[in-house]
Image (cartoon, rainbow, N blue to C red; front, side, top):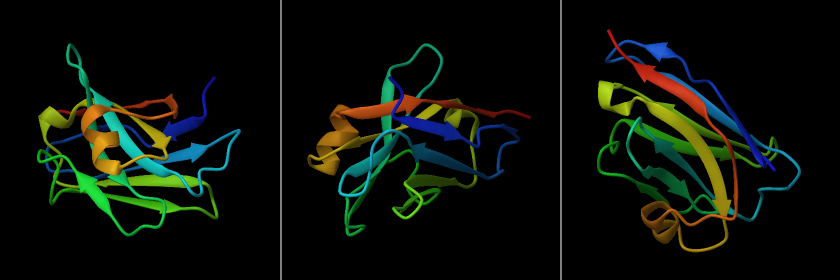
Length: 125
């Protein structure tokens, strides 16, 4: 069962930007910590960025710090990922998830209770 629907993935050149969106369906994400994860071809899942329910705390993987930004709009039940200065190594399927535990644990260990289908981001010249 898909609880989130992600969109916004595309083919972009290195140095380009994208905004990914993820709409929660069938449940209310307000009150949950949310996060973005990715899986590159032949690699495991990686926590990219996580945000707590009150927007007070965020986590970013070292590989995306200073380039990506996570935000949420609980009125729209939507989570966003702003991606700037994209690199070829950012190529992956990106998906979002929700959990009510610690955001560092969520992102580093990949703990979540709700997730959904992903969207493909390809960075290539």
